[in-house]
Image (tube, rainbow, N blue to C red; front, side):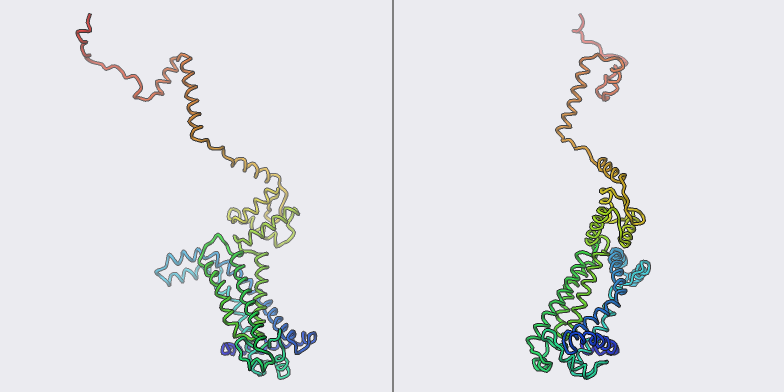
Length: 409
């Protein structure tokens, strides 16, 4: 870890400068040598970095949704060109280019944040070793070494020896309790973030290998953080726990306000929007009107959640307009009721009832025939309606057989 962190030593000066500026601010309130001043400086560094990464986070969300939508096509390409890897790669790149999808966009926030993470790790490691780094001079170094968070020094680690921890002015028990709690919280927040994404913000109508990969990452990432966390200084654990909590809150906002089409979160969002629109008779927010406008523009391509939303508006007597607003419409209600009435099919009779009805018709016909004489027209029609084998056969022409002598008198 120290070797990797040294590769990002070029950014240690900006990172240390930002921490020192925040330390001056919080030091004036809590005291320059307190853990609150140094701990809040690290938290503020995280918030500042994550605010700068919001545009990359938006690209990450779009890329992840595009990748989910492309999974069926990608699977078809893999099956079609499974024996030709080069053609398979060419078709994949062509698909990415046509849809404007970049597979690396989903990793951009992590890649952009990594230099700051390793730079902070490098700064804290030098503080633990008693070395100045960046803009942190000797007075600031002594102040940082005296800072404790719940009894654990910022530069202490879970795996440190008792002598090293004692040199920082703390006990090994306090350090391990604090670091263990922070590692558990860090892993739990990572697990819940991924679990929330899988349960609520994934299109359930598309079953792809991408979903299985995300499900595996839901269990793998927390284990990785738990294993690596024992080698992180307390200050780095504060950094990583803060960024996990930020990611969790940011994702909750996206799921509630801009859910993935076809997901459980979209169904919940549209039901809230339906309740609000029918109660007020209008949609006030421009962002919500854009959502309704997009649903109307889809037409027959709407998913099940969107069709349920449009049907709910119709039952309440409203119709979604092309500009995203809703208008009162009694015609929609009448058509919905008329359509429901037309869809009602008559009850299917049982076999016994059908035979009984048929037998009754036959009895009525026979009674009518026995009580009335047939007219020539009726006779001809009856003859025409009989099968060929029941019709009277014509007499044969030619020589007839002689009668028996006993028949003569």
